[in-house]
Length: 126
Image (tube, rainbow, N blue to C red; front, side, top):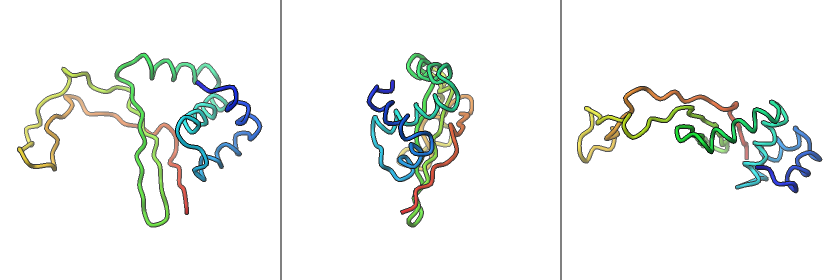
């Protein structure tokens, strides 16, 4: 949920201004999350933003996370989503797993995961 104070700021800055604030890492924590929510709402309409908010809160199998790649002075952030995360009974013991071998996970999903980018990569150059 976007606070009234942040919504007012985002509307004053506009879409490009908010993207620049994100690009230069000037937002963090709740404000960063709210900036992404506001951009989603502006670009795709309030119905989609509301639906995503409800889905992420109500569905136990819906997850989003950030994958971060650091190369030299560049930081690339990949916003990744999983629309279906296996329940407890949908995991199985990995036949390739060996105790004290950290190259293989102990459990794997019975069906392959289907990660997707929520939006394009975000590159921050320092």
